[in-house]
Length: 277
Image (cartoon, rainbow, N blue to C red; front, side, top):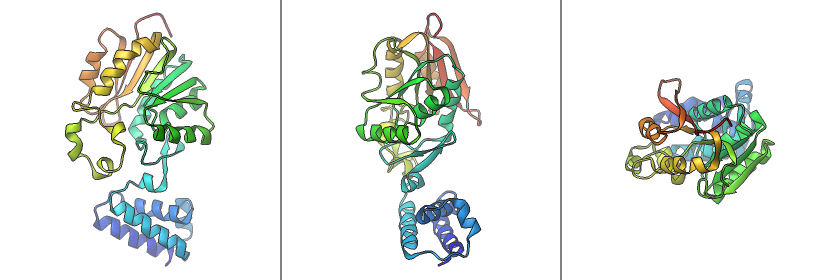
């Protein structure tokens, strides 16, 4: 079978199953099966697939039709211009999380950064490579921490991965900037999630208790202990969480809420009371 025919058939299967972006998904899966970049498919539409390539492509299509996210099939996801390895042990990095990085990068004086809930390590690795700061990333899941460590190694970052619950292993007043994309989906909304998310992404990284606020509450409660005076806390916001998190930060300085490109409150930043970082 030629590349062009394989793409047409794959696209039709995905389209009939109402999979989002069927053509793009077919291209990504076929390129992965052929161990090529997508551009290769456009340049060689007449190439005949080897039997092993066709078998892999068919398996990848079957997995996607069953709801498995494309990123978990290819084990790859781009974040802030870099390719990260992702597995079902970690949350797939989202483009909206890049707003956390953008806000953090404005705080150029931060020399010691803590990423709470590292997952794939996307935030921690990106900030370390962009700032050359000393970065520590905590992760409660040993399996997720292993994925983060692999991304640290592959991308040449200098990030210390610590397996612990949130900030429990971090000494007092040692951090200039805390960043986090915490679990914020309320458990009561579980059944309303897309099946790709609900059935495949790690629940520890998704759900923030019945209300969705459990992890926010704990981070904000302990952040003053961990931060140096004047240090900053930057967190991603889930839909509808901005007011609650802003209330938690009462008494902090310079509380800022940053919207995403759709105008939705996406990131909150606040400065711990005290003298400069």
